[in-house]
Image (tube, rainbow, N blue to C red):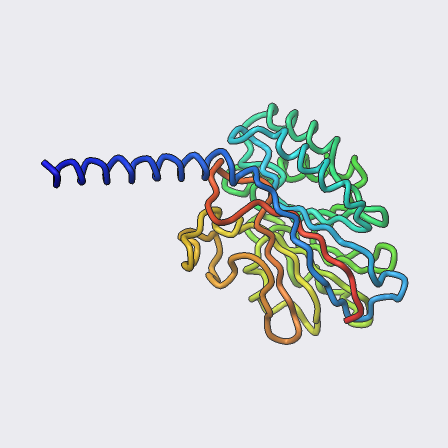
Length: 281
């Protein structure tokens, strides 16, 4: 009987721990936003931009899988930092289903965080709709951001207040063109590259670019066992998980863990907004 009672108590205890862990991963961590602060040395950075801040927001995933008011509340918190530049690195919606999704996105984008000196955006794979092939969805999402004074870069570069932004269209979408994006690259400019999918870093398109590449897409796996890599990553190069990664040839990749989520579950991978302080590189 003692042995049977011990087994019963152990089973009930493990069940309780499992339920608490599931509740935490479902209701707490998906909304436990972390503001990550980091220095960003940039080659050729103008002196008047030293000490300015650049905020990265990625993967807000507006859809039907979690309450979009969480994103609005996160934007309100982010706005308090009064960033000089803001970059949005794709996936504004989860896979497009109907016009209701755009109604929700409208409410969110009406509250989007804007940079004092400039606000830049690129598209992600989910912004291309079903199977990443609905160009009309990508055009709609892009135009909604443009209407709100976000400079959308689709395989192009744009210099804003002394900082050159290189914006790749999504790697899985129908419009990606890395060669076109880098065609007029000037190594004498202070430049930062934006590409939603970090696998772009492994393509032979970068010429003599030496600097920071800001990505999203992976969500850090959303669930990560302690001391182990994430179980699922939507990238070919599995070293591209999250955070700062030093690449070869003087390039530095930073993968944002995402503000939103594909599904309302996270474990050991908190949602993130990143704030970089610009420095001379």
